[in-house]
Each structure stands twice: as C-alpha cells, then as structure tokens.
Length: 154
View 1 (cartoon, one colour):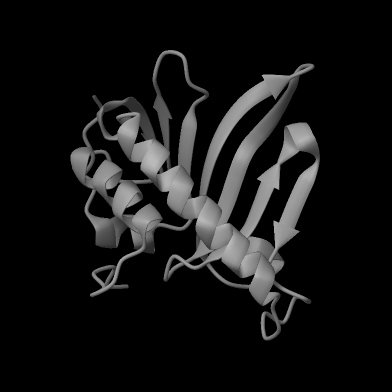
View 2: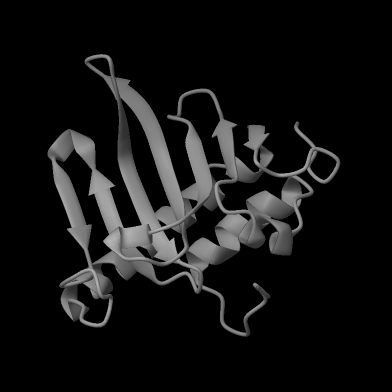
C-alpha cells in the first residue's frame, strides 16, 4: 500500500513522523499486520501504534493508536482509537470512563453514524496535536513485527 496521500490527516502525519524518526519505512509498516511500536516517555502512559486486522469491529485492516496503563491490576487503554488504512477513524475506547464508540451500524461496514465519525475526527485532530507537542517522535521505542535491520531503536 502506498501511504503517500495528497491530503494526509493530522493523526497520519503525527504517526508517520514517529515511524520515520525510528527509520521504519512507511510501506513496511503498512504491509506488516501485527507489527507494533511501544513508545515510552517519563510522566506519560506508553503510546502504542499497531497495524491491526478487523479494526472497528468490521473485517478490514487498520491501525490502532493507544495509550496503555494499568488500573486495579488490569491493562487498560485511555484512549485507543482505530483507523482504517486511509486514516478514517473507526472507533474509540476509553476504559476508565467505560466508553466504546464505533462509526458502524453493523459489521458489514456499509452503514455508519456520520455524527460519531465527526466526533472521532475532532478527537483525533486534538490528540494528534498532543502527540506531536509532547515529543513522542523522540521517545524511547520498542518495535515488534518489523524486521530488525530496518528499524532502529533509540
């Protein structure tokens, strides 16, 4: 898949800058289902970027971006957003406040909630600014599922 679009979303820009700063070719990440990066910085919950299958509850490949922490001994995401491979947001999960929202009416992916999509786009724009402003592209990173000779850990 060619990830270079004439109009990239703010979240796509933020995540691709992180990938590029870790010497991960974008095409390789997009083609590596199951690959993920776990980034760590002091004072923040780890940020995980993952190439996933079945994003947003439908049968399509996508990308997950999430902050993970533990609460009462359980691993939780706050938030986790899933995106299709064109970076359209498909769902959000916020465990501490028991929120799960998806844009889809059903698993076919043919019908969706336009208002929820609008809300997810607005949230992803805000979150992408935070990811960029917090300096995640310079964070300590652990990379899984991408050939080691291609990616450099910091």
